Amino acid sequence: MKTTETIACHECDLLYELPALPEGSVARCSRCGAVLQRHKRDSLDRTLAWTIAGLILFVVANAFPFLALKSGGLVRETTLITGILELYQQDMRSVAVLVFLTVILFPVVQLAGMLYLLLPLKVNRLPWWKPAYVFRFIRTLQPWAMMEVFMIGILVSMVKLAKMAKVIPGIAIYSFAVLIIALAAAAASLDPHLVWDRLELDK
Image 1 (tube, rainbow, N blue to C red):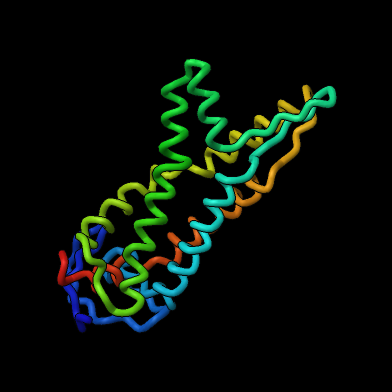
Image 2 (image 1 turned 45 degrees about the vertical axis):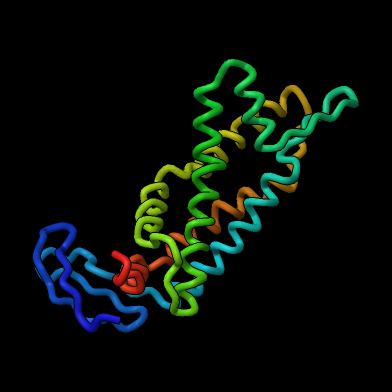
């Protein structure tokens, strides 16, 4: 691991020779006060734990009913996938594709990519195929995983549908809500500088 690294302030571009930081410490720019680097405690362990939890929650959120509508003795259940297919069949194909990408594909790629990187790094090994490329890719995808926006839309829909039928939340909607928290916690726990430091031989 490097003892020093050259880093430019993200706000004012002042260059620093930054020493290795102890866990829990923060380096700030002496000119503008911006955070240069934050060394988070147990970053790899906490991020890996949240990533594994996120993958389990993702499977549950897609395997079980998301919502059920009960009206006149009839109950109709829906999952995330069937909801997207229904949008597609109702000629809202662009919306269906957007929901599929931002709610299913991008989050699972992000979680799988983090697991691919963090498991070998945990045992001081490098992933076998282009880890630097994978890390850049999943960092690029992160803003496009809009599960919280989808959840807000679902809650609004539940309020409106409640006037027409009884809305029964499924186990998947609770898993989906906790999954949003797990993704946010994984992102907050991750120390990108630490990952790049471990991947420096592959940059």
